[in-house]
Length: 228
Picture (cartoon, rainbow, N blue to C red):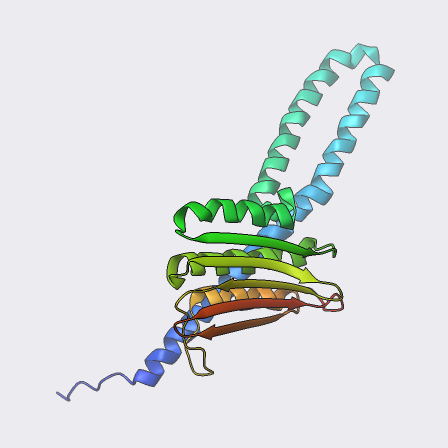
């Protein structure tokens, strides 16, 4: 019986890296499909059911003999429409859709602040309208960077800033312990997910960190970029 051959460390690292990327791709695909179905329910199914309700209302007045039965049908339809709305919101599961990017970020900061011993500041310095896929990508990057900073940075200050005129710039800066960033260093799941969010809208994603001093996460988006 031959001796056991030790695993090749480089192959093990490559396998783990491949698994992380596959996980991020699966999460992105799942999120995109949920958003697609949510848009169909909101933009197509909802209006069709609403139009049907108007027709039933007109029928109730035009044909008094069926008024009582029409009211019953309208009640059933109203229940169906409410369930469609609830399912659409559940599938999108994004505070950006409900409140807009600025308020969603303010709510996220309020949510994580109690678990952070320092101060989290927020500055909105742009007049650009960030909506749809762009707003969602900005929120995803900010939320992930905030969570990373709160849990791992050891910082006493975190600042989230959105600025820019010709392009929109998101920056999450902390004064924590930082880490070494190099071409060969292994990206964690959080950074991989931020990179994936940036790719969705064709934005540039940067991480600058100085060990023992600070970390800056930046997302740069030009309006001419193509969201995917």
